[in-house]
Length: 284
Length: 102
Image 1 (cartoon, rainbow over the protein chains, first blue to last red):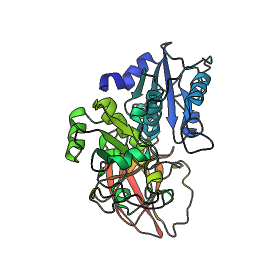
Image 2 (cartoon, chains in turn cyan, green):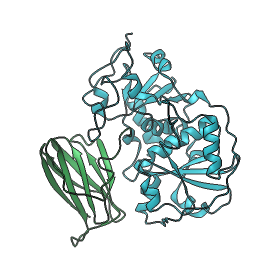
Image 3 (cartoon, each protein chain N blue to C red):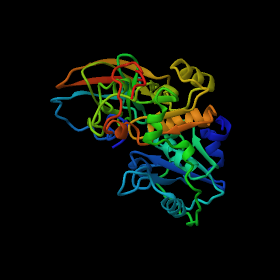
Image 4 (cartoon, chains in turn green, yellow):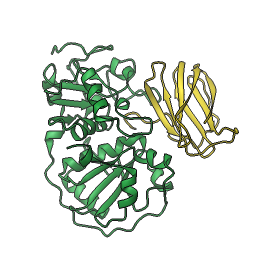
């Protein structure tokens, strides 16, 4: 993968949004944003209601994903362009699902909703009418998804990248400062993980930094590009943003997103945890 | 619940809040003539310049963050100019006002 096959610009979207084979999809945390105004023709996917299993802690399975895309009128051959608020966090998270279920024709709008808005481009409240499709998803590609045992096996062997804020990484906070301090039983980080906050990969307008800047960012933090990598955050969507950078933009071959992330790891019984600003040692 | 949502996604509704126990940073983005400016994004950076949160400002430029005590940079990102920063000192139990002219 590369920037050319993973990203599109706002200019590209403005030019191609009406193409029959292009489907724009907005994915937000604040889903009222779509209702107030979205790029003309875009459909909405709700990051939680549409992408999470309603009962167990997992994301939608293959059949649920097929139903979702079918209901949105997305076909297997369509080129899907994802965008959203929060610097594309949830759009990147959805992008990861699309790749996991085998939809290769998928792109992220560089800068997402923010760049579109800052360029004063057209928004509409009109919801498009799309004809439902029969979508067929592939078996989940678990080569891009990490589970808790993968993380434990990776201690001291693979790159672990914690993309949360420095205070969450160090264990001074369990969640971003402005959110309820909930979700994991313990604070800290996975021993040996380096801390590269997701925000360092993006410019102020939400667009991604250049490949040269990104390579220097991760190499400078201690990521060894000759090793496989697992990225995590708190619930897996900030780390989907970093997975996108490493796997899709920089073309690193073996990068997995640990969507259980700290809210799972920090609640496991008996696993090692490191506190403070340093990665720590790989002791079990 | 999100992994790290903006400080206050409901920035368009900056009602009076009880700041007890909170270090509130509230304010408005205005243009050069002091008129409220819509369409800005406001981000909060900690004392080391690290990203802490971001909200789209409301229709009259208003925004609000629930922060911790200490020094913060509030940055307005607009289509009008390069990003504009102001620094504020937040105090737990108080609401501090930041006005950003772009």
